[in-house]
Image (cartoon, rainbow, N blue to C red; front, side, top):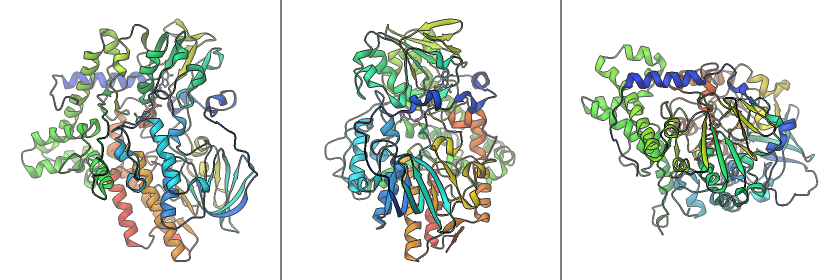
Length: 627
Ligand code: NDP
């Protein structure tokens, strides 16, 4: 287990200064434009290497009730929740050969999930599935996607290996016309867009990137025909290869240990180190799930999400690196609080109270006594302490002192995705593995033979891009199709000066559409939980409309306007935190305050889903025009 609540000696002012320096080094004017779109000459980076058999079928031409675009957990859960309500006339469009979304594409060696499987895999009670480990891996997750899809008869309602190319509102028929790359023309009463926030791989716009003559691929399209092995590793074909990997985010942290073991030589090009904590995976105890009471999974999810939202719980059921992090922060407040009531006030939940973010953290703090002001500082001290723990782990594990120093992240926890791995740091002790730390600059140039950094050319047989996915770019670029709404308004045009939604799900001008995703919605690292909550909400609305014999919904102008204000206000505190972070996709590459409404709901995921539940309990579909 991780060292709990150990106190490290540090000088807060020095750390503050160091964090600022490291952030400023990485801030760049071009933000998201530092990446190039995977298309044209780069299109092969997005090709599906996993297709076993090409599906041959005639084009479809028919009318249906609900079209779901995307067959990841969002599409599967939307389908399952609709079917639970007896809404059977659905069709799921998915470009991969099977369900799974992110888990279909990300099969790189070591791919696995850091959120406990007992909460990450949704509907375990309904499917009766028992994950083998506390943290499941990609093959088991993909297997679970099959189990879930079969349980709810989703294969019969799917169009796999099919890409949607357009989605147009037909005002006369009041339906959506969906076209695909297989010449399908589908008229759907309702459309669910669940395209995944991390679905389009991105490439850094490095000088000469298209000159490279060796082998190359992106981690989300792993080329096992070149590397050998599978998701469990054993990359035997790399035994005589010199391999370079660019990027050290959560994906790289998981595949680098396998590359280190398999390659003749491995060069890791790092721009910013990830915070890598203890993982400590364990096997699921036999009969543990079978012995749980009914409703156990939801209770466990609620417990975990409450803690992550900064709420107090009687017992931490999950007890892992995520919850330890929060307990550490909360404990720091507890020891400083002069009384129980003050302590409660100081919890993270207190931080997220409306008067705090409405007035903005600074003015709120100015109205408080000196003693009360301490809590923000105490939170920062707890964060420094947590990161010192992570840095000290790198120091202890990595033998070469310079490499150890380069692997220490200097930014606050939650600025980047926390990582948990028990072999990553150890990989840098292998004689065939070298870390090329670019000190925040990134790779300079790619030649026909390899990579240049600091004037030196590193010749390699293969370059692997672990450079992540498009997050801050527009909907149609990421999804691969445009949506033409009422009066031919495109979604791109509608979002030109910022996202505009009601509850993140409904958009004025795009009737009968449901958008799943984090923008203007609740967000949590347990992304399947967010998708399930959105699916429950969708199924409720479609069911209500059906029961009332209605067939049209659209966000009202007022509801949309109010929701945008709510998002701007509620995300202000989060934006302040993110502004001080080193750049990455968590903070829109350092340009967090450019468009404040392109944010998630700042009150936390649990509060957001409670808000939706309360909305549903009123039963009047407030904020939506219906007929
Ligand atoms: P990320 O966007 O997190 O990482 C991209 C990496 O590429 C960063 O290290 C980035 O550096 C680096 N990079 C970008 N441009 C350059 C350049 N020009 N030169 C050198 N390096 C460069 O993508 P990932 O695929 O790693 O992860 C995406 C998300 O997927 C995670 O945040 C997480 O949500 C999810 N995930 C979860 C996992 C889990 O459960 N464990 C595992 C894998 C993914 P810099 O930081 O400086 O920008």
